[in-house]
Length: 152
Length: 152
Image (cartoon, rainbow over all chains, first blue to last red; front, side):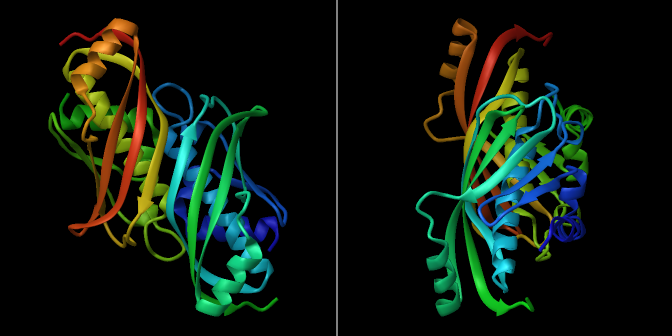
């Protein structure tokens, strides 16, 4: 799944991706980064609304898992179960969210369990960055239910 | 601060309130409820996107504190510091978020500290409801900085 394919999928399926003007800017096996501008996500203090910061983080984590599963030929229903979030600094311009597996999350075990039991959980982190500085930290647990093969 | 006044303020200051079509539906000294429809908040599974569920919860909690402080004649800068969120059931239609103080949060102490020190923290919960059933739970810590008098 390339950048454009993922971007088109997200824009088509999740209207908030368009309204927050979220762009997928990089994908690798280990991470996925999205970014969003200030204007559509601004609050009464001329900084990024906490709801947008949280939403963009959740999106980055979901998209990271979605493309990582797709790259292994797996189609599943992937939903967020719970998350924590800290808002560490005000964001007053374009910001990014980079999602990765949390240290200790075992991808192979997650996939093996999904294939065997049809249900599996995994923990993902996302780091908010504004102008090269930490602006927030997300950690979430996602559940995958069902396991179908995609054409690779 | 009445419903219309708060709704107008939120719509004017936070574009995401408009794009998620969030409406303030009730305000009392003890709680504040907002609601939002499925369509602008839908995901690839035809249920509410987790980012929207989180964002609407954060908004309800922020708006609850904002109007409660305003009703006491206090203007302050109120920002979210951290939160937890659980997504307990899929939401496939209009949903609401009702914010309240967390049991044990002492409003009078929060206000007294804000007046004395110019900075104070408080914990707020928000309950997501879909068709009369629990759909999610938010808990957040907000920081108020600065304390000015509003004309009452």
